[in-house]
Each structure stands twice: as structure tokens, then as C-alpha cells.
Length: 324
Length: 283
Image (tube, rainbow over all chains, first blue to last red; front, side, top):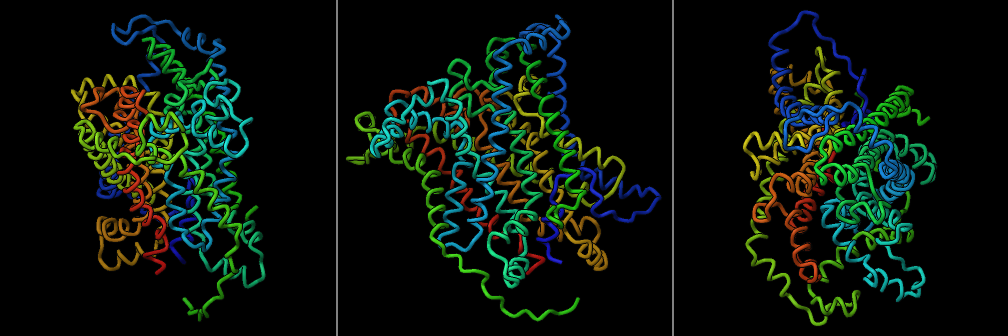
């Protein structure tokens, strides 16, 4: 048994894991219980105090008309929610978030897997290539957004480059044309986050033992069939983790949009989070902003629950070993 | 376990196909072109950039970089970012691996609830909690202090950390735990001597994620730290870009220098990730 094999087989984000039921004594062993909670307590306390409690407070604020300064005493029920959900701009924001979720899964995912498969092959200068491909991921979104603002400006370097290769007709107002800017945003996001996806996929690929490839190669399997029938199934748990993180990240998108376009022009790139910032916090309508935050959370929750069911079902079906 | 005599396996297939190199080259070009453009732009003057946005520096000027490197704000921000990122990373790893350890390897009342609670944290972006957080940090007297961003960052990095570490720690073979027990190691001994070393690659992964997230954080520092002389680098970069918006070359130099530390750190850590998982048990 090799460590890496087990790692791959076990790395799904399942909650109820029957993977390794360890026989334990029925009698409560207080020393053991104390040790367990002693280990868990620091993380639990910090997490509850600084994540759960603030989120709970946001939920409370959402039922009030509150500017953040005075007392929290103007209870207005669900008015904030009604107002948000009847605002076409907020509906547009939800649509943009959902579009980015879909595009990420359908485009970034396959591209990342493909690149990871290639980079996992012997290749001269492979380490360098890998390092360079991860570069955008370590840049802050502020830096990336500022860089692309410079590059994409009218008559900027991208336009100059396109003209120099005879594609001058393709140039657009990349950040100012409301029909183009959404795709520009998606490209910049992909540029920024493909490296993260590739990092995860490569880590997953390292868990696939060489012996499997060697056995398959000896049996005469082609490169493609090795990828299809061995690598991809074994990469399954990693892909599912990535897809989950990608979906949640896409729904919560903020920093990049805020610096690159501010949600504009004419709300063409507005997301739920930038909407919250723009119409909630910047206008000192913290109650309304909190309601938007709660809606954002609820949409994420629905996605996560549906996905968990899907993931659990797949993992129980033995997809890791059968590739079904 | 039976001994299988292993003949040196023939290297499976000859991979040297030009297609792979072509794809690798395109990926690298698309990836680093914007970064290279920034670096080179820093060596030009704004006049040069305005005249031809895509030309080489001619002549090369280092004034922009020098002016950044002699500004005290830059060094203050660099120090702040470094302290914040390292303390955040250490805190996340320590708290995360302890919690993940018991979740992964012991069954106890409330374990599933505990894991679910942490998993649920993936759904809470900082933006949802940021106003109540601001009020709390203010109440704790940490406004303007690095501690005021470190603690919430640790808290918000815990879900990812625990979710990644749990399967890692669960994968450590039971045989090793049994062997450690037979050799007289208690649970703490098993944790320190077996689990932590074996979890090394996993710890590096979550450490890098936490470090990068902290290094790149923007919203929380913006609200908690505010003023550029006590800011972190992303905040400082944005402020600098606004202040010198007409001096493109200077902005490019500042953003270039501000991204160097993260690139260096990541290059070092990435080697460990790549050489990663196959180490201890397999070898």
C-alpha cells in the first residue's frame, strides 16, 4: 500500500465518511474526549467567533433599516429582501454570477485538466513551465486588475499587438463596451485562476502511482486511453473538489470585478457582491446590504447542498475504482 | 507482503512530442506576458509608454524602481504584509492541523457536526461578514492593528484548510498508528512524530493557500487598516495607482516590486509541493 494511492482514493470532500470505521470502546474515555476537544477547541473558538457570529449578525441586520451608526431599532421585516429581488440590477447580478459559474466549469475545468495532464509528462524545463503557469495565482487581484486595466486600455499594448499582426479590426473597447466587458472579465478571471486549478490537478496526479501507468503501457494502452481510463477516474476526487471551490468562488466574486470594472459599465459586470458593496455599504444602507449578503449566502447554500448530494452519490457508487 | 522482483520498467512511451512543447509554450506566453509587460514598463518613462505602448524600453530607466525602493511607505507596507502573511499562515496551520487531526482519525460524538460546521464556512465570503467584523474588531480595540486582520483571516482560512487536511490525515495508514502504539507512542507522540511529518506536503499546500490569500487580501485591510502608512501592499499598490494615475511607468514599477516577494515565496514552496506526496511512506 502506498501513501499516495490512499491519499487519492480518500480525498473526496465527503462528510459522512465510512472509509475507516475504527473500533472504539463503548465506555466513554474521558481522557480521550478531553484530548480530542482540546485539539479541536482553538480552531472551533476562533472560527465561531470570527466567522459564524458575524455572519449571524449580518442576518439580524438584514431585517432592519440601519445606516450603521445609530441604534438598531427600525425593524422592517422582509422589506430589504423584497427590494433587492425586485431590482433588475440585482437580478442581472445574479445572472452574471451564474454565467461565470457555468463558464468556469465548462471552460476552465477542461482546460486545466488538459494542461495538467500535459505538464505531468516528462518535458524538458517542466519545473520552470509549472512555476510560470502558477504566477498569476500568486498575484493579488489588485495587481492583476491594475495590470489588465493598463493592457486593455484603448490603444494600449493589446490593441497595438493586434494591429501589428494585422488583426486591427478585432480591437474592442475591452472594458468600456458593455457587450464585450463581461467576456473580458471572464478572460482575466481565467488568466488569474487557471493556475490554481492546475495546481490542484497536478497534486492529484501525483497521487496516481506510476505502477498503474507502467502496467497499462505494458498492456499496450495508448496515451489517450491511459488518461481516459486511469488518470481521469483517479483524478475524480480532485476534480470534484476543484469544481466545488470554483462554483463557490464564482458566486462570491468581488475583488477582481471591483478593481477592474467596478461592476460597470452600465452594470454589465455587476455581481452580487459588488452590488452589495455599491448599493449597500457605499450608501450606508447596511441593513439592505446585509439582506443582499444573506441572499448571496442562500444561493451558495443551495448550490453546495445539491453538489454535496451529487458528490456523495458518485463517491458511494465507487467511481474512484470503477471509473463509471 | 510478498516481494515482487521489479525489473526496471521501460519508460512507458516516448513523450517528446512537439505538440506538448507547443502547448506549454503558448500557456507560458499567455500567462507571463502581462507580467513581463509590467516589469518592462517599469523600466520606461511614461512618455515612452504613451508614445508606443508595446515597445521595448529605450533607453532603459531605473528611476521608477529607485523611487519606489527609497519610499518609506513601500517598506512599511512590505513589512506589514510579511508579518500578516506569516502569522496568519502559522495560525491557520497550527489550528487547522489540530482540528483536522481529530476529525480525520477519531470517532467521537459531534465529529460529523464539527466537520459540517467547518465545511459550511466555505459558503461565507468575507464580504457577507465584513460589517459585523468591522464592529467587532473596533470593539476589541484592534482597528489599525495587524492583529485586527490576522485573526479574521485565520478564521476564514480554516474551512479550506480543514477540508484539504482531513482526507490527507485520514490517508495515513492505520498500520503506522498501530506500529507507533506498539513502539510506545501515545496519541501526542503519534501526532508529533508520525502525523506531522507525513502531512508535510498537505501542510505546505494549505500553508501556501493561506499565505497567498493573506498576501493578496484587499477588502479587510482596506476597512481595518485604512491609511497607506499602516497598510499592506495590495492596499498600498491601489493607493499608489490612484495617487500617481497619470504616471503609468511609476505605477508599473510599484506593482512589479510589490509582487516580487510573493513570487519568490511561492517558487520556493512550489518545489516542495511538486516533489511532494510520494516521499515518506513510499520511499
